[in-house]
Image 1 (cartoon, rainbow, N blue to C red):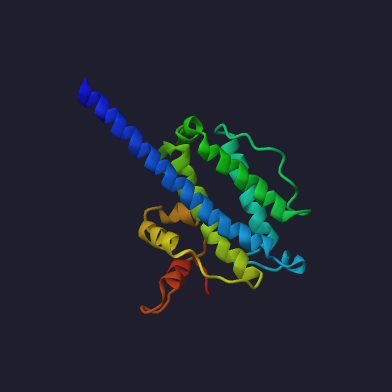
Image 2 (cartoon, rainbow, N blue to C red):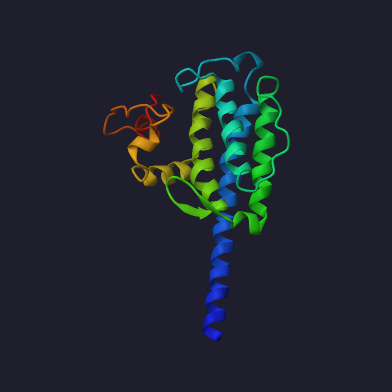
Length: 201
């Protein structure tokens, strides 16, 4: 009985640590996207982005469209999201804050979510498909609008370590990621990461 109680306690402590790590990464990476979005000059929102056919505004529209669509179906209650055409910054901040609040709800954050790749908690799903997507699009937005393109180094290493874990056909199916680009062996990690996703610095 004592062993069982100890196992439950350890499992609870592990879960708490995992949730804390996920929340910290989410806040840090989405915060960097928020900073870039707030700094976009008003006349730069329609600049072309590295995503073929997308403008800087479309990058925000992508995130503020799919995130509520997916997580809204899994119990996260999103308020009305402002129009990306009228106020892309407010649209993004509404979505970011809503998902941040969901991560603080322990029961909701632990809810199992099925994706095409695996089934895990809602929090782990945010970590896997939201934080990573926002991370990549931070570069897209910065590149499109003439801002600092430096990506978070800790998250960059996590993303590099995960390279190849996702099937190629799934990674590039919707055209958001182009074919990988060859770069020199001595290229820095960010250049290699972007090249893997079909982006050229």
